[in-house]
Structures are given as structure tokens and as C-alpha cells.
Image 1 (cartoon, rainbow, N blue to C red):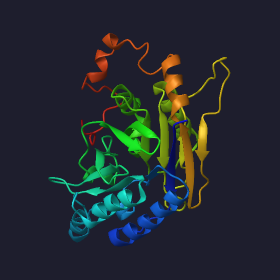
Image 2: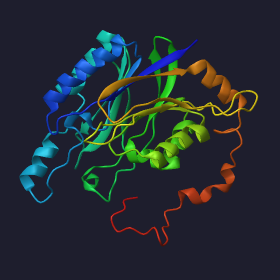
Image 3: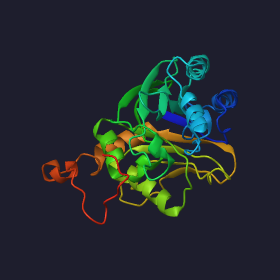
Image 4: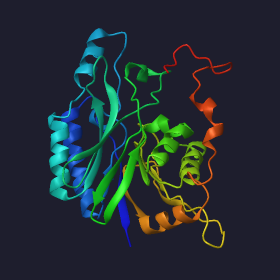
Length: 295
């Protein structure tokens, strides 16, 4: 049985303290490996605790931009070395140095210490301080070698999961599992929406959020197997944390997920893409016109 175990690292991070978050992140990854994880998943922008500057203070903005990291920073090289040492994949999140302004990024490092996927948040929250971020422009998928065989992995970051196109693009590119770093309150409607992304795309989803009081926890992992072979409804929730700090392990039975994807009717089995041309339209009509929206 090909079981992939994902550690959801629901812990606090220090705002604007890269070195402290590196040290804590290393300890958490060691704990995840001790609990048998194949992948460790951090909440959103772990390197600086999902923090933003005072935009009215030029020094604050400058310091924030200077906290952005490139691929050769100590923060990222240490996590790559750690992944190799622990023989465990790590999905580490950080403020990424980028031309002009930084990006909100996750790097998925395989158990050999090689960064297999780098994803920058596409759906930045442009109605908030995230307008300071440069948005990503694609939804890549990579084959991740684990101790229990390869798995096709993609990523979304927080607000991305609230757009059906994000998970749909990843499914169409071959994703079987989607990793979701998060930094917001997760109430029943957002959690229900999260389950729907798994249902409609027949993919497993794993999300790591910050605990209270930064956010409200409720890190979650869900499988896509909504019905059994007799059509009976199944509970898709593998893990749902409470609001406190903690590490949760979600076990994805990839054999069962793959058999379900071959058998059932969602995903890309019966889509009618010739009728979806309007999805690429850039026209925006009322009531959706927003002056701060970037397209």
C-alpha cells in the first residue's frame, strides 16, 4: 500500500525573525520525521511569520523587502540539507526575493535535498497589504520521490484555494496531491470549500495554518474519495486540528486515491472544455469591478 504521510506544522512563527523561524522550523521537521512523515508542510510565509510592513514608514518597507530570500540564502540551503539528512520532503514557505517586489513562495524540496517545485502565490490578496507582493503566474506540478514511491504534487497558497481555477489547473497538469500553506481564519464555509476542491478535482489536499492567536488553526487534510464502490457517502476528512499549536499527521492512501480517480466521474473525465472560452475573458462587469485588482 502506497501511503504518503504529511505533517501539518500548525505552529507560531516570529514576525520578521528569519533566524528564529529557521531554528524552530528545523526542530519541527525533526519532530515530523520522528512521527513518520514523508512530507512536512509549513504555514504561509514561515520565514517572517506572515508579516507586512507599515506602508507609511519607508524604513519599515525597506526592512521588509530586505528580509526577502533567494535560493542560496542560509534559510533555504539549511532546509534543503535537512531534507536530505532526514530523507523527508519539506514544503518550506518564505518571502522570496524578486525583481521589483518580493513574492509569497513555497519551495517543495524532495528527500534528496533537491527543490523540485517552486510556486509563488498567484491570487495575492490585492485588497490588503499583499498588494506589496508580486503575484506568481503559473501552477506547476512536479513528481516528488518519496519512500513509498513517486507522487505528483502541486501547491496553492491560502487565497488561491478560494478560486476553483487554481486546483483545476493543478489537476489538469497531473497533480494527485496539493499542498496548501495558509494564514487566515478557517471557518466552516472555507473548510467546506476546501473539501469541494478535493471532490471536484479528485485530488488529496493538505493545508497547514497558523494557530491562535495569529489565525485560528484548523489545519486540515482531505481525501477525494467521496463515495465507496456501492455509492455510499464517505467522510473525506483525514485530519482537522483545533486552534492550538501542534503537529498533525495526515495519511493519504495513494493506491485507493488512484483507483478512485480511474473509476469515478469528476476531475477531467467528462469536462466540456470547448464551452469554457469565457473563463479566459479579461472583461469584468459590475458588481465585480475593483480598482485595486491586478490581472
